[in-house]
Image 1 (tube, rainbow, N blue to C red):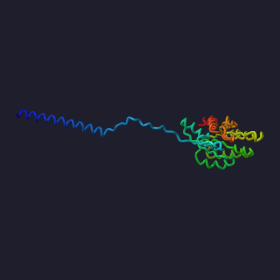
Image 2 (image 1 turned 90 degrees about the vertical axis):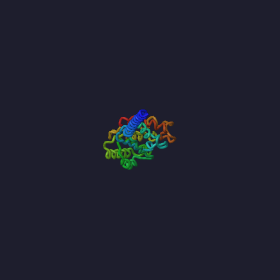
Image 3 (image 1 turned 120 degrees about the vertical axis):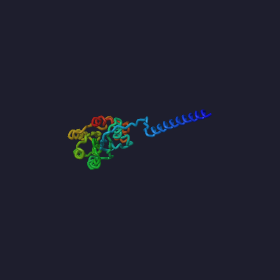
Image 4 (image 1 turned 30 degrees about the vertical axis):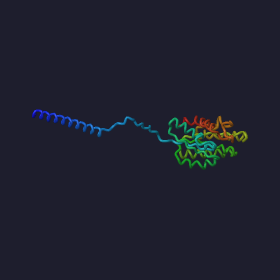
Length: 234
């Protein structure tokens, strides 16, 4: 009986030792799990760093402002869409104002130049022509606008959009008016778009009832006209 009892006690001791050993292993595993960081299987995509945002100012009349259409349908907004599609770091500023003359623009430009400007697009003069303002006066006002931009931002790139008057203004005046723009562009070394409303002006379906301001479809064509000259400057 003693031998059986001793054998039983021996077996119990062995089982206890095994259990204690197993608990020690479990504790080690628990400690390792607590101290070892778990890696997430999902990789976080970090966006590529973009350069500083540059600014393009469209300064002009109701044609730039987008009179009669939604703001996002005006050609400056369509230019912004093209820029965004190419992932370029440019912000378009629509500085158009309905009824703006070259004289009023000369007074207003300084306010808009309070923000940084890297590219300046000048669309001004159409209201002068419709009012029959002397071409010499219009030319002087436009030059004054350009001078202010060059003085504030001498490194800014400059672009000019030309305009034409309807035949009703008289042949002499329309020719003299149209000649303002190429002369101004040449003098100031500006990128030049001869006629902003190319393939739009005078086409009823592309203009609103007033026959002057483009429809949304017309603005798409104007945007293409501008983009062809602007894109190489970006």
